Image (tube, rainbow, N blue to C red; front, side, top):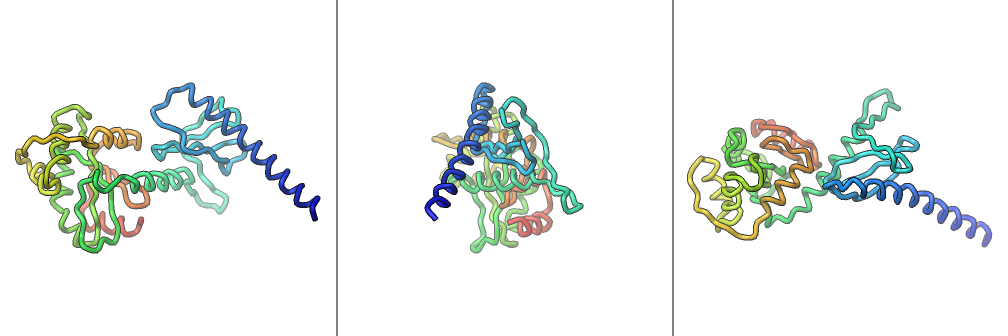
Length: 239
């Protein structure tokens, strides 16, 4: 009995060493590249010899055991005769977790009394489709969808749109000020310690390249505007 226990512990310890070696090699290799994203975790992928590298942005890349080769793209499982995108599923979960960790006080939120689910929208005040989406905010709320706005000024974190968005985030009533700005009205300039630049960079890391970029609660991206009823249906199906 004692010998069996010792053998089991030795096997477990050996497995940890084997796993640690590839992870260390991959981390060392990626560190030389000075990537803007940080490695969050490294694990074996379903494909033998290929390791899954989870970045803090939610994105996934793959690496060889020695860290000398990197692969960016989708890994599909076809074992059951169907295409199952393993990469997309893993990325969506990680992105959803990342977005759901943003403190509520750093977002401009329009919420019903009893939300059924939520969406996180990277928005720009000067974007026509962002304004169209915002015109349906009450309908979305009535359908049980909480809308969480994150800032993504398309002209960059230092342009005029960014300054307008900083004024929204620093306003006494950000919700009212957001609505005024989306209507094209002039809003009072305000300044404070705000997350606009940080959220812009987060959007870039997540691959946002246009607005509105709507992320459902499970991290699935809806690129561009969709009518309130359609968006609500998708949001409720992807919690």
